[in-house]
Length: 193
Image (tube, rainbow, N blue to C red; front, side, top):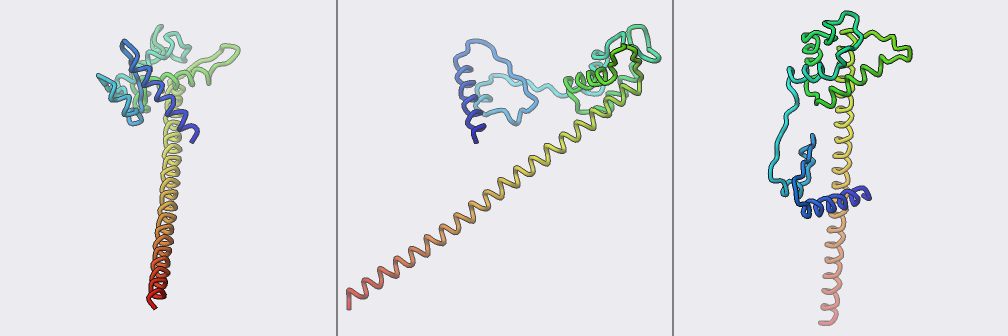
């Protein structure tokens, strides 16, 4: 719970700074659902940017591949692969952001990097890099879902336990009240006799 306190403290400081700032502040997130309501109430305008569609992803891939990348059969002098290859790669990574596409391209380049510099890339290298990145993303998303389910289950168990404890305390309290009334009744009856 120390991390919760740190987060709350950070939020408070951020809100104070927002209130005092005289200018424009831009926030960007791909976790809109996690955005704090206090922040949202201080925003005048919110703009949603959707993830890139198939054609946009192809353009991003094309822009991230170095124009003079050494390729087995280059499409042209300044374009290693054809537009069809970029489109095919784009289809493999539906739901990817521009950053995820950049990271996939960087992974491809780093994986094939060799000290002697004698590296030749192929269309299949490009496609395989995106397949692997898609698998990695799906695996991470599945792991997150499992972790989230565990947290929810744990919280529910805590609530169930606390409900059980509350019910037990109520029962004990009612039992004590009944005993107290019984004792009071006995005292009153004894006094009357």
